[in-house]
Image 1 (spheres, rainbow, N blue to C red):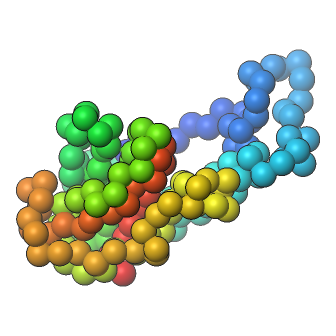
Image 2: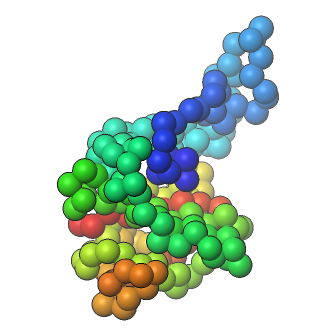
Length: 171
């Protein structure tokens, strides 16, 4: 959520690998945690991928502080604890759809409005196995349907992994 939401990013010391203890200015970070199992390496890999995508996708940073760079698809689904929004680059054609599921329940068949037709490729799934997740996702992407939703002319039907975010871009 934080990397896709507008505004500059702040990641405090140790957050890049899931440090267990609170940061202490008198001690070094617990880098040894990276050797203690897949959890910490998964967090580190995810942060690396988040930063790579953030740098390479202009929709995430080009118009960060302008209304044209952000649009809620749905921010009111409190019953399922899901938020969806799009980020746009300055050209308004480059976009990224972000869907966040804040519950431990997989949401199958979750419809989200999108502004354009086409195939939406999943470029990030924070529940991926390489991050230590359960690997629930959208098999690489989904086609849009001509079903208007959330005030948009088209929509996609997603599988939202538990406690995760998925990012999709038009292919």
